[in-house]
Image 1 (cartoon, rainbow, N blue to C red):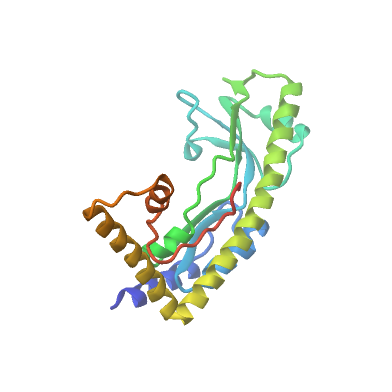
Image 2 (cartoon, rainbow, N blue to C red):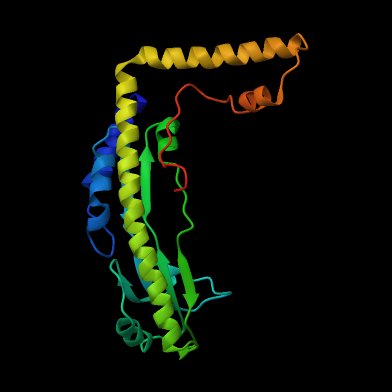
Length: 234
C-alpha cells in the first residue's frame, strides 16, 4: 500500500470514530475550521477545542495541575461570571486553579510540507491558583479581575480563530493554484538555485560584497515555495 492510500485509510478510520471528548461534539467556534481541514486530502483533525475557562481542583506539586487526576469544578467555552466561580469554589477540597486555554487543534498531516503550513504556537493563556487545601486564598475582587482578564482573552481568542481560518483558507487556495501550475514551482526553485550558485561563485572569486548584499544573501534560504499564515504583528 502506498503512503497516500495508507493516509486516506487512516483518515477515514479516525473521522468515523465517536467523539470521546467531554462535550461529545466539535465546539461551534472552531467547527468551520475543522471542516476546512478535514475537507482537504492532506489533513485530518484528531482533537480540538475552541478555547475555554476552567476551574480545576486537585492535589498539586509545585502548582502543576494534572487534569487527568483532578476534579473539573467548572468548564465553559463562553465568558464566565463571578457567581459561577464562587459556587464552584465551594466544592474545592484541594488546590483550585483558574485557567484559560486558547484554541487547541491537533492535526495529522500527510507530508512535512503540509505540517509547515499549520506550524503555529501561542502563549495566549492564563493559569492562577485560587485556593489551598480548600481555603480561598484570594478576594472576590481579585476573582472579578481575573475573570475580566480571562473573558478578554476569550474574545481575543475568537478573533484569532477567525483570522487563522481566513489566512489558512487563503494559503490553501494559493497552494491549489500552484499545484495546478507546476511550472511555477520549477521557476521558483530554479531562481533560488541560480541565486545561491551565483553567491558561491562570487565567494570563490573573492568578490567584495556590500552590507546590503550581505543582508539579502543571509535571507536567501527560500526552498522554492513559501507560505505565510499570519500577517506581521499577529
